[in-house]
Image 1 (spheres, rainbow, N blue to C red):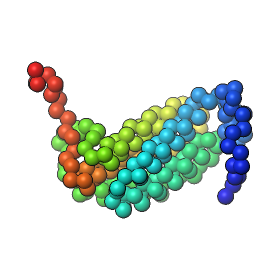
Image 2 (image 1 turned 120 degrees about the vertical axis):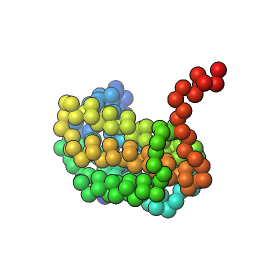
Image 3 (image 1 turned 90 degrees about the horizontal axis):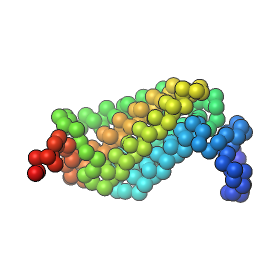
Image 4 (image 1 turned 120 degrees about the horizontal axis):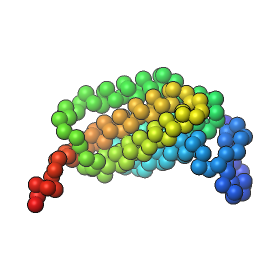
Length: 186
């Protein structure tokens, strides 16, 4: 294990800057900070999801994903670092395929909701999409491992499927979008 934090506040960020993993100081709204900060937010939302009653295979997968996200945050915090590999992406794809195989074919769009756990998975999915947008923004000006973008893209798909699995697990139907529903009710 690397450095241990013995003091939580340092006062070094009081003027709106923060230190990257390599020691360089940047503004707290720097694209790199936005990217790893949003990945951290996603990790926290997954932590809230993990506080729910979940099937053990999803609990295990989400815990592994939290570790991956911490690695991804490190990649984004330390320019030039790469931790995630194609194997991480393949693991997500294999899980995605396995979970999706047991779900009914989607003929309509679904709305976020259903069970509480599924709704939280949808919140995680939307934060994941925002993290993806922040990482893509960063790639316009700085070098970012391509595995970072691929991983976060695949993760958002997995979180969508997990939401559907969690509704099935809870015995709750997905909430189907009804185009123009509010106009028909008049």
